[in-house]
Image 1: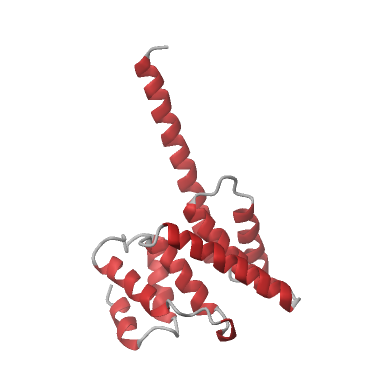
Image 2: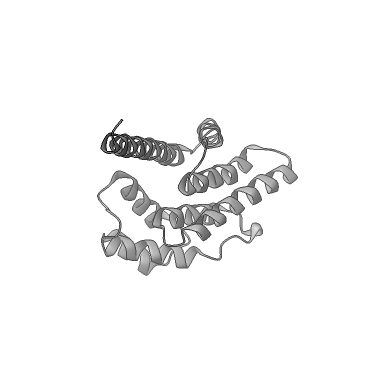
Length: 171
């Protein structure tokens, strides 16, 4: 086999792998958005848990799914355990890719919905402003369905200033 054919095969394998990862991330996004009830939260958690060789973004989604799964268990210690593990996975993913807007939104969404007694609300202002700036400056394509949903989420959030809500409304 010639060197150029080997190179072509390697490039095709890389592209196929990238497409597969993108499809998995799109599925993570869809399941995250639809995780509004117990069966959907279980499906989101199970999908993320069963992804093999998760990349950083998929690990962040698994963190969110794990934190959300805490709502489905009845034992208070288990609830705290799921939430803490999920939070830790999410924070690790963000530490690995701090300027990733999608990860920052995932953290915002978890902090927005987290009970105040868990004291996990310290990045709400920072993340909401960072996401807004990325949308405003065109770093994020605000016409994509996922980001349209993010904008609506931010507008409906009770943990965002009325001034910033107004700015999100104008995007």
